[in-house]
Image (cartoon, rainbow, N blue to C red; front, side, top):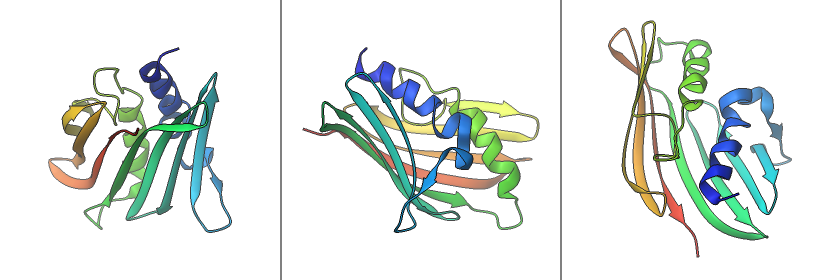
Length: 149
């Protein structure tokens, strides 16, 4: 299995399908989701809820080969995270091999619109995802990362 195929599987088997219910809380309060297959190991750890900060990392044979940091949360305090985060999970289920960072460039369902803008490739990238509800921004997340040598 190649790295990108593994990364997509790991993302789909952690937050995208399990969300916060698919995590464990560590002694220091960090929340973690992980996935292992073959020589690869994926870990997503984050602090906080709204806002939150975290890191995804991939190991191959006990050596970190890729990582991504992220920071985000609900931007409109009148909006409900109970509605936003399930929609975000649906968007993240549409991650692609061409842009394996977060969700697709755009995804819409009902009154929600997800947009992700990124620059770079799997080796080095930056990006931002936003969610709109009825045309008003209600969530934002910035991310960056790449290969680690």
